[in-house]
Image 1 (tube, helix red, strand yellow):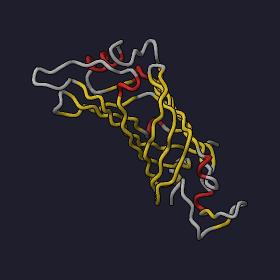
Image 2: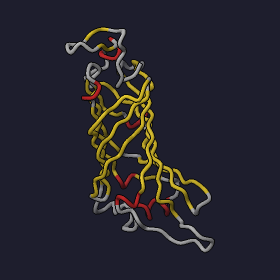
Image 3: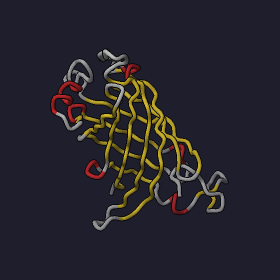
Length: 201
């Protein structure tokens, strides 16, 4: 069952298209649960290995429309001071003026502008990603992992997502040359999302 795709064998909508009743039942407003969600990234370091990190403090909302999936939206706000790579010195450098300038630009934001089905449970969310005051489009490929009611009565939906950016396009240009050639930090950054969201009461 996919959030953003229709099942032609199910119930009809007012426009004559058809949707799954299970899909339609997911329509509503949701809040991302940060305790069970992860927003992470991977950067190539010294041309030989990957460094992984994540953001520990973020909020977000989803508006799902099961009868007209293209009207669904997503919004995420990330606190840049919460960046964590498992190394305090590296985290401090990332928060500094060389990278995210966390004191001057305390948040990274994403606001969706488009949702499209890719088939099955796969779809794509496109939106505006703002870092260091620069806003550029970002497309996130997502897989809908399903919906469930947890033991505490919360109605949840789950997603996994991935995207790639060139950090230089957002003004993140700091680097250092290696004696053997290449640079210390890759321009390409991989973004990873594991999202659990709870339906609002």
